[in-house]
Image (cartoon, rainbow over all chains, first blue to last red; front, side):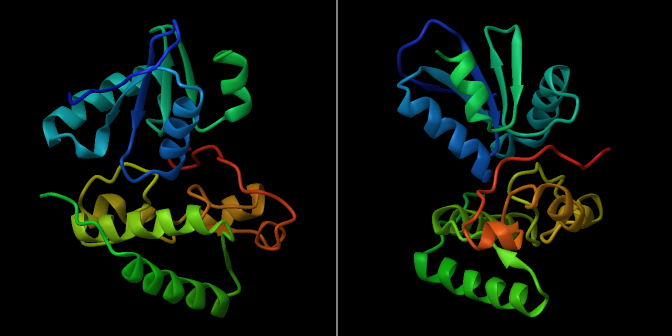
Amino acid sequence: MNIVQVEGKGSSDIFLYTLSTCVWCKKTKRWLERKRLAYRYVDVDLEQLEEKETVMEELRRWNPKGSFPTIVIDNRDCIVGFKPERFKEVFR
Amino acid sequence: MTDKIFSPKKVGERLRQLRLAAQRRGYHLNPDQEHTEDLVASLLVNTQRYGYPSCPCRLAGGTRSEDRDIICPCDYRDQDLAEYGCCYCALYVSEEIARGEQEAQAIPERRGN
């Protein structure tokens, strides 16, 4: 899996399942960057076919719909979709 | 294969075609120019990748038969427009959003319901 690390601050482990073409995924990344929060992401559409299936299995454990973006926080909580109001509550 | 970066001119041309086609059919494109241009660029990328413009906000399976329902305009557009005022990626929006009276927001995925 090609995981990209974006440097920043914050004590939470933020992991994003995204698509390189998805506008809501890009807005989510920009939101986190504006808050200068560190996060990691994988652009699932850019993965090789076999790896893509493995990543999707992993993603569906958090979000059975397999939709994007899916944001996993501290390997415990999950937010599905670009939800700035929810982000404000969670990433204070 | 590496994705081609499409020029602003190419994106603008495609956007004009889509806007015209939408108007003819009584639909409206998102007035947020940055959002819409970004989507159109991604539709061009997906057309190059898969041979058809699958929804940029959904993972394409890579074959036309698997992705038939998510080729833009997707099968869910009209239901999403009626219920939420925009389609899943918010390329197509309601008249209220087109007039700037409301803003398009991310909506739940209807595919697979």
